[in-house]
Image (tube, rainbow, N blue to C red; front, top):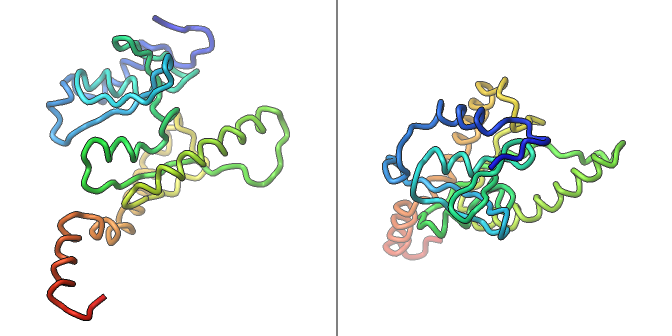
Length: 200
């Protein structure tokens, strides 16, 4: 099934892009446990894909509405997971993660108060809704990392190298928080406090 009218990137081209970067393996074959979050456009529910084709899971989880065709998987019609969860912290918790490190890559928002078109107002309203949902979910994360990405659009790959460096920098700055969030660190801290009376 295709929805050609208004689509920016044809599904075949998007599939070719995914195939280039993602190996043709099953999810269970990944070295690190992998879960993809998508949204079923029929029911409106968040769908966590934990089995089957890795390529198909990635394809479904980043099928941005209007830019790429949704992906039919069984009874589901799947699109970008960001529709229901911009940063899927709760999905990671439900998958059994001991510690959840959330990486937020939101663009800078228009907070100047200057809106020249109805479209800008529409987008700002959507941003507010998304931000509130995101803030609520991020409260459940152990660590939140926010790389500086400026006004980058998701489809702009020309700045990839610099953005990767920004991500690495942000992660290094958060290493202390990450260590403290690790279960082993927490266990050691509890033991130290147990055997050192009077210490906070």
